Image (cartoon, rainbow, N blue to C red; front, side):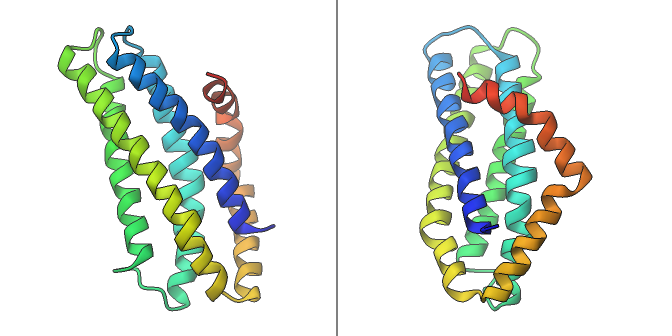
Length: 181
């Protein structure tokens, strides 16, 4: 298992769904009907796949190993990535609350949904580019083969953990639906 390839493959899936979220929010801004259930599906994908499964591997395994090998957690690339993960969680929480508002959305709520969706997509697309172009190459150049073997082993354990495996199984149909929009 190549851990960086796993993360980059997940980035492609995330970017695919972010394109759908962007398109959906443009439609909403253009006056399409409220679609709380669709927003709730995007939020579920973000919380389950992007945050729990993808960011979980990054934060708990890759970033932790990088910090153990001398990268700073308080400044530099890892600090930026963690800060952006937190910013994404705050935007996701906003979207979650808005997806649970009573029907129909007020004009103000609709505007908040559009702004938060766009902000989240913009944040995540730029974030992925930084990881793919800067952070991952830094990790590849500074971590040893032994480190990568251990990261790969820990990724496999993370994926096979009963809770994570069940979450992945549960959201598979959702991912298929979102990617098919």
